[in-house]
Each structure stands twice: as C-alpha cells, then as structure tokens.
Image (cartoon, rainbow, N blue to C red; front, side, top):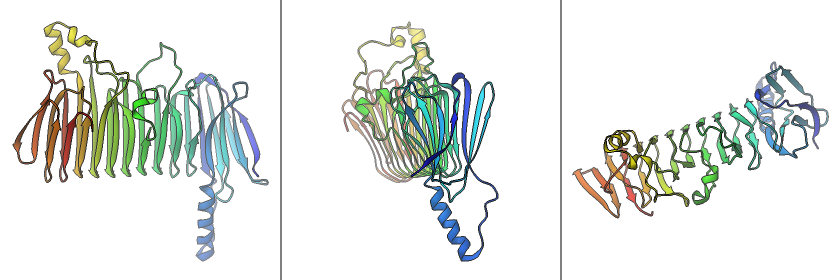
Length: 382
C-alpha cells in the first residue's frame, strides 16, 4: 500500500506558470560485475513503475501535487515559488518508484503555462471533458517514458519524447467566445509510435479537433503514426521509418484562405482519407465566391487546400469525399499509379505519371509521389 509522502499546494492563475519535473537522484552508482548488472536491471524495471498522473478532483478540492510511495520510501522534493511561477522537482531513486499526482479541481482557473517533464517516468492523463483549459500553453515532455491519455489544448500543446510512444486524445474545451482560435499542436518523438485521436470516430470527431486556423505538426524518426485530425491552416506529418494512417476531417471549405496538408516518409506506406464532417455546410457560397472578379482571382491564388504526400519507398493511398473538387498529379519511380472516381478527368503523360481534374472550379490541389511503390488516388467513397 502506498502512502502520501508529501502534498504540495499549487497556486493557480492565468498569469502564472507551473513546472513539474521528475529527475533521477544524482550520485547513485552500482557495483561492477554480475552484481552490478543485476542491480541495474532491477533498478530499471523499478523506475518504470513510477509515473506522473494528471487527474481531476472535485471543484471544492484544492489543487495539489501529491507524491506517493511505499512506507519508508525516502523522498527529495524541491518547491520553489515566486509571485508568477512555481517549480517542483521530484528526485527519484530507481529502486523506490513514486507515483506523482497533479490533482486539478474541476472548473478551476488555469495557468499561463504548465510544463510536465520527466527523465524516465511515463506521463498519464485522466483529465475529463469538458474542462476549462488547464493552461494557455501545455508542454508535456519525457526522455524515455511514454505519454498517454486525454489532453486539453488552448493556444499550444507540445508533446515530446526521446524514446517512448505517444497516444493522446484532444479534449474539447469550454472557451469564451472571444478566445483566439489560433493555436499550435506539436507531437514529436525520436523513437516511438504516435497516436492522436486514434480511437476517435471521424464522423463524431469535431469536438476533438482544433479549428481551421490551427497549425499541426506530427513527427517521429522511427515508428508509426495514426491520427484523426481536422484539416487546419497547416498540417505536417513526417516520419523516417514507419507507416502513416491519417484521417483528415473536413469541416470548413471556405475559399478565403489557404490550408496545407503534407505527409512524408522515407520508408513506409501511407494511407490517407479525407472525410467530410456531418455538419459540413457546402450550400452557402463562401466569401471569395461573392467577391468581384479581380478580388476573386486574387483570393484563388492563396486559397484552397494544397495536399502533398511523398514517400521515398512505400505505397501511398489517398481518398477524398464526393464534395472535393481539385487537381491531382501522381507519379511513381517504380510502381503503378491510379487516379479514379466519379467526375474525374485523367491524363497519363508518362507510364508512371497521372494527372487529373475534378469539378468546374478545381480550387484544391493534390501532389502524390513515391520513389518505389504504388499510388492510388480516389475521389468519392472509399
């Protein structure tokens, strides 16, 4: 049974920052030879059982950081607090894993910035929707642990690991109408898989997606990427080695702005589906269509969706909804190329290159390429 070793009050406020950090104790050494190796293995296993937890508590409860451990466990916790910032450092020993709980009252005022950082502990969130934002900027960082659970995003959500998987779900927020819609989502790992909204049904995903003015960047050097994302101002998905399975939810087809959707992998296949949200409105002509001819021409040069999907080695499959109208160019260094769908006119200027166009006013553009592998682009239902 674990005991609460120390409980630290947290000061909240929209002008405050909070940094919680887990660090291994310095000066811990092990003996050499076989005994040292066994101690190292045991310590490594023990350290991985510790974790940082983010959870809600009742609205009338205080905001605290609780450090739990087995009876008799030593602890070394530093709490530095100023008028605008609070930094809590929990020093951990591999043989004495700790459970670190950040307990957040429901409906509590948030922070300017919340930074969760670990050396080798995983970070697990059990925050429930729909909360006020925990912080305008939320940074979640671990060197060799994992990050999992639902996370809210207001202006910035930055998740990074050096070696460990990421599996998060974006939470819908209760925001004031005047709140800015501009935001940034960044998820990066050097070695590990990435999942964002991976278990969310795309047909009902609108509550979990950032708005059109958001920038999204997902990146891994070694690992697969699976995500359900809104087609925002900028979506960039990159991997060196690993497959990509991406669903882009189309909720805003306004022609008065440009949006970029790019994916690339050096070695790995890509499966990309753009789906129309249930509440997509295509009946009202957007502002650019009502503009004068000169204004319309200027708007068209910097509007629409520009989609670029590239693989060094691997197949690429892209599917668009029936309402999508645009041009496409697909080419493969070695592999078959197909562009199909109702209302699509195609041309094959070379054996492994196909161009196509759909619609009387093809505003959007798609460019698909692979060095070695097949390509399939389809307009209409998959």
